[in-house]
Image (cartoon, rainbow, N blue to C red; front, side, top):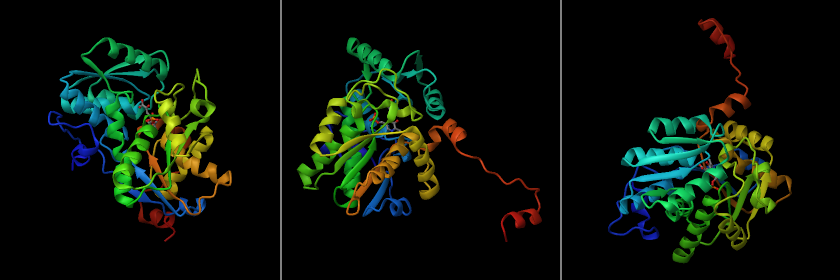
Length: 348
Ligand code: AN7
């Protein structure tokens, strides 16, 4: 199936738009079996965006952005990235033969994401600065040069594509959830989901969820209502101090009567372990912040009992082997290759 084709009536598609696909979207919505019992909500689902072709939700937006770039006959794309946008842009660039350049903050992107950009063959430009500085650079260069298309979420086509996540959730549940939990970095995704929910509600009367966002404690400009000069967090994907879609995120929070919260890194890591060991879902730290958020709000005595909640799990755990290495305890039983030893270790 083709994501843009399926939802073309809700997307900026015309007869000249080349509708391409690498199989993005149509990601599983998995029902919680165990964490739900600790949280005590009515229903809890996880949207597994790590199942997209490059392993994150970015592909939904990227496929729309590159389709529109092809329509305009642009031959080069560029983005700044904390990792996933660069992996996604590089993948679609390779697929479609578009020259792709990515600006990344040196030493601050997860190894899996960097490996992807290398493997797909993008031009990798690492800057001695953070994501926010990289974004300013690519914004300026793409404003000055018509032949290079910016594919960060400042590009409205990225937001259009990412709306499809909301459409899929409603199509599967038959209604909107009560609450939509998601990590917030550059704030494109919260903007996109809210716009998708509103669009479906306008057309199909599917009701609207509260948008509930989470930022890492030392990278929480929206929560603190001020720019963070030197953002820090183990969740490098959301190490962002001046989100591009800040205004739209505030609007989504306000219109949906939602909320946004700051979560400590050690809680992010706890949740990173819980979602894997309790539900069999391995996600990267930025994605586990929604799970940490469930526990955080429960601790704040938030009443979830009649709520249907969906957590968007934005990226695969395989993206960040270094965090796995540093924070998981690798218990192994070493035995001689004999049935006797194996029988003993298996308690048979
Ligand atoms: C796994 O790749 O900003 O709030 O440059 O990789 O829409 O930015 C990634 C962000 C959440 C935050 N989860 O989404 C980038 C980048 C994961 C992410 C976010 C990101 P936005």
